[in-house]
Length: 139
Image 1 (cartoon, rainbow, N blue to C red):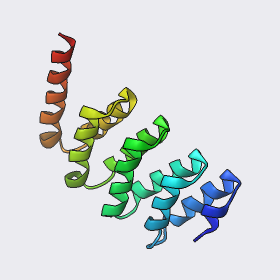
Image 2: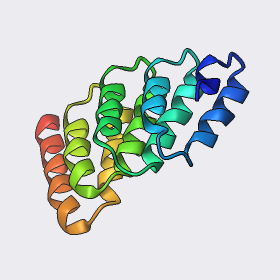
Image 3: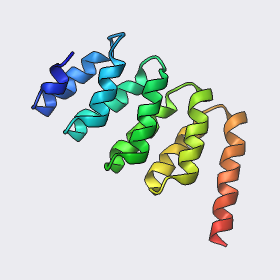
Image 4: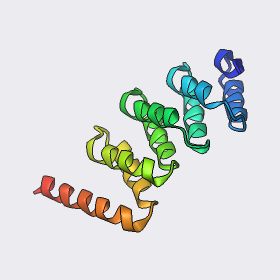
């Protein structure tokens, strides 16, 4: 599984990451690629692929780290989208925290969009609270 990690041509590396999504044991390598690959497009594909795999705590933790610390705003947004693909019990608290606290508006917006796609009974109180807290800040 070292092909994508060692491949210098981003297009081939991206394709190799995409091919990994069907492998049962791909998550640890995809986490490593998402965190450390020098090419942002390859890291982005690894993040997207992590969101499409069977839910794993280590993948969710890695996505949280990327949202908080990756220098790329686009990659942070993609990590939020991947988090939103996890089961609601795991994704909703994380999306709410991102929506309330992330320093970048575009990342917070993605988190809010992710919340809006969840069960309305659970999402509505959070979205209403975000609206109320935004109105208070604007006063």
